[in-house]
Length: 409
Image (cartoon, rainbow, N blue to C red; front, side, top):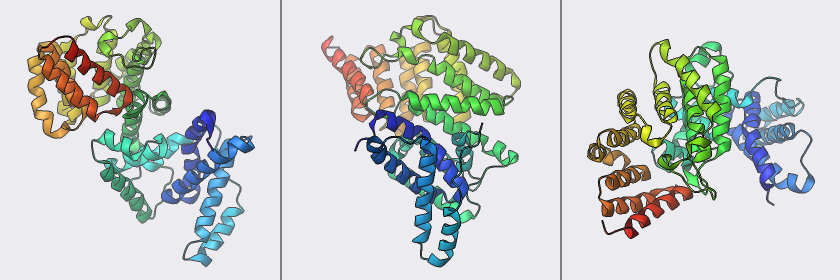
């Protein structure tokens, strides 16, 4: 039985809160995740016919905790676990504490000290963001099977540590903050430009990333990178109203109606960036926010300061070594110095991004700028065949068709 759109949205919102409660209560992330998924499935099948309970979160927590109890009872060490199960079943379900953000706490729980950021971040994206393994793999530019193994190893490593998932001390919280910020960054990116599916964006993910980043910023207002991250999200999200047309089709930056950009978000983002930059060492989120600010300050696409953006991406590439940053630098170089300059930079990226649709899309754009219409059309087709987002596929296919019919190039 379908859960219905309203129930689906509610379950997506409540899932990390339920998981946070069950993990804190029982300590075993794998068991808690399985139990939470079973509780969500029970709600999706029962609520549409029986009605939604007065306290949906409490209902889900109780069902998930019963699943954990049942799981313990069926374990090989039955007698020892039955004692634990009996004590758990007599304990009232844990309810959220007023003012406590279970989703944010769960993020810190997942960034466990026994894990490297490369394993903690995917685990957190699964637990908090509700992203699929495929979506996480796309964000990390690795095969889906590789990411599945990484997430599985993360759970096993935490279980083997004997510490379980627990609330971090203030010192541990500071140590985990970088991983938490990266999770929020990836969560926002997946929401703003969804890697797969029928829609260009998922505002529920990007909105939740912004909300959680505001919470982190309120708790660490002096951290320049947290401030920079929030500025980056706001300056980018400000353009969201203009990114799609009436039927949901993609509208590229150069063609967007800038009068529909959210000026309140832009003003807030610029103020945050101005606050962050003078504090000392400049990090990657502050540099990316500066790029977003350069776009947002331009009243027209032709007024964009591409030389400034090229400088920022050059610094960012030296700092991160990220191939996607190098791809953006190639675009900026083409806009500032001509398409040949950008195309020359793409050659070095072929081994790293050969199967990524964005590399082919950028090459298509630069080839068209250079007057090579046939080459651009072929590159647009290659990009469309590799994209897993339907709106992007439609846009890329349309561009290829336009170049094929507008002339013989």
